[in-house]
Length: 171
Image (cartoon, rainbow, N blue to C red; front, side, top):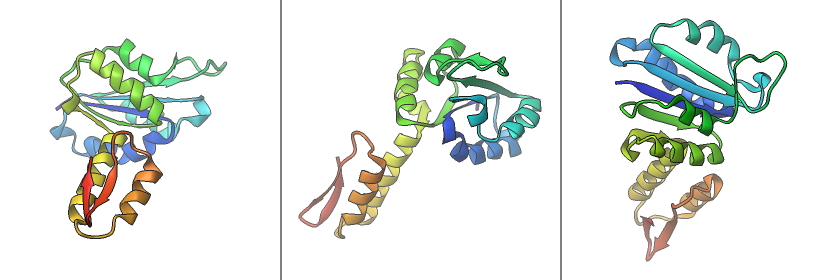
């Protein structure tokens, strides 16, 4: 299956291992597109590996962007959500995304405008929501203090953990 990885800033760090997994098992995946953006060229995480390894591999297309123009940068300039829409990917890709919440919010909206089904979109916020729901299910009839701490730390919109008569629920 074709993959589309979208990362912003330090959000590349968690995706890096998934990207390297797909690279290692190349025969299991089709085309791999990586859209990665940061504030400046200096803020691009693992830039030497990206430039010297990922860019050289067949079947991997890398799309880099930075927020503001710089004299030593000849690549794309602009924000990740707009760049994703400009690139106009086909909707048959599985999307994995990690980055700042504002980037995720606008990129998800852009992908849906392009016609992506919600089921093909995987972002760090969706992953955290899934993890919290699993934790709530496993800890039924136990204290919910830890769940509240995790939820407050991540601040996932649309997810609230509650203790109702000793049971945990995800709403």
